Amino acid sequence: MPRSADFPKLNSRMNCSNCSKSSKCKGCTSKCFPVPLTKAQVKNILERFDSNGDHRLSKQELKNALHYLGSHFPNWRAAQALNRADGNHDGYISEDEMDGLVEYVWQCGYTIS
Image 1 (cartoon, helix red, strand yellow):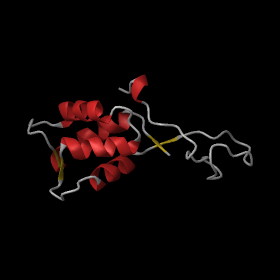
Image 2 (cartoon, helix red, strand yellow):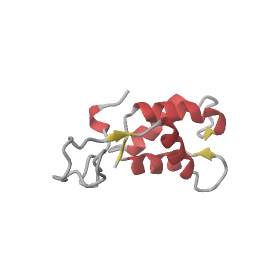
Image 3 (cartoon, rainbow, N blue to C red):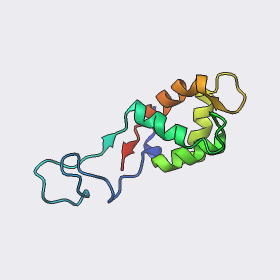
């Protein structure tokens, strides 16, 4: 469940869903709003942060991914994610545990920026 203190950054790089211009766009007729990430996009982003290629995510790799996604408290969020998704409690998110991690991160409501 997302917490108000940990919503992703909404900044001037946010794209309009219709015209791909910055959020200060005055050329489109619809309102610019953040576009939520899909579960597939979340999984792809998380997998890119497996920096040592061992097919599992450490707390540090997870923290880096959450920072990239815009978490205001990536260390805390990484600890929460490990607590929820690390089924065997080895301190890593393995390929078997990835779906639980993706679900948790997706529920946090990160958006494309």
